[in-house]
Length: 599
Image: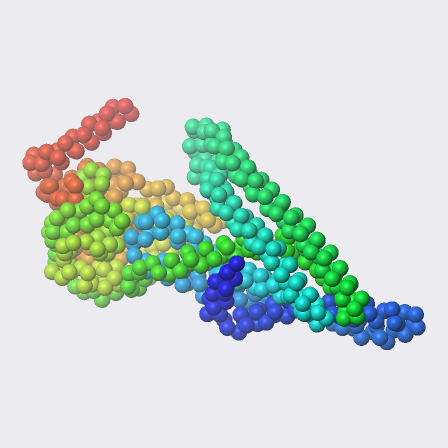
């Protein structure tokens, strides 16, 4: 058992507060020593009683009784003080590691966010980070305390006979080995059970969550999902039972083994007493102390070793997380000074790109020139590279070949803070911030005044909706707080667009900006986008699958297999680009069939 590997938890906790950590370690050492001191006091009391009772002279008993009371009081005070210091230490860990984790996440290279394995690592390392570190520290202290509690009685025996003390330690080794195996098996069982528990939890959410209510009632799939859930739970329970049975048998085996060893140790101590090397009181007191260790060694030690293994693996995950590559200064605030620079051009110069840990080239020799005062719509089949262009432009990936030039300068030479200010972006999977509309609009736009907020809501068609709320623009959105108001999917998208329009950026970048809107609302939004672009003398790039929306753009960029295969107005492409014409007529037929069916 490599107990020293997890000593790193002490170092990590010390980084938050050396004083509190030292205090906790000191108190745990005292708590570990107290049982041995109590054993010696009880031994003295038992030895004093035969001498005091016949003569009714209790002076010899008074000292051990006072000492016993003092040690019991000390034990209570040590436990209370330790709980207080651990509470303070937990608060320090929370203050230290929560911001560190959030900061690390915000600086991570985007490839880690899109990588499934790395994302799982983020969940394992980041879930309750302060609590995980604190529990790892406590686990180490618990193991150290148990070790000292076992060592204490052995040292008391060593005062009378060193060879017997050595024999006692050697007899403890098989128990420690069995406890370690039990702990390892318990951890392995937990790992086997975890996938079934996770799936059962997901299936349970389908049967109880608010989001799935409509489909659950409409399709009546509750019985089917319940069957899946029962199947997963049966497998989990079977594995639980098998693991618990094995652990129970091993724990009972440890108890029986330790009981046998206790009998052997007691017989040896009786022989020492007969030789006059140990008092009868010490022998009885040690017997009581060893008896109390039966539960500790058979159950508690196994659980602690299981947790120890878990925390050792957690440290490996934490190390891996801390070594993940970061994008320098990506968590900084936008540098709005760059907005004094007017937008002149954006050029993709023979850009090729492959996502990390994949082989397929998403963009291949991609070339495009973009100029101010225009709307550019990117269209094409799924997987042709439209959204990838947006990711490269906004700096989420920079490991591409070729160049992207913003106003004649390589975009990689701009700081992350400058790019954040110069570009305003709405991604396809936009975030729904369950704050008030006012707070949501001011995320990244702290300088917006009350009147500017009203204008943004009017531009995106949200003004009437927000005015109808009890507290207007101050009303919490979503379902998180009492009295909050929920928005439809289209209204959430409007709010995301309003936040984007409030940035004052020179370049608007929108990925499916009206996917959740109806045709009329979509038309109005694109007109708002055009008006904002004209007023700021900038341009807008947007990705869309709806060619009816692309028709309003000044330039339509047709993509296929990571290349530009057509560029021009809707009418030009319709007559000169067969690929675009095929997509347009296919969508047109679909909409005509839909209208006929609705009629």
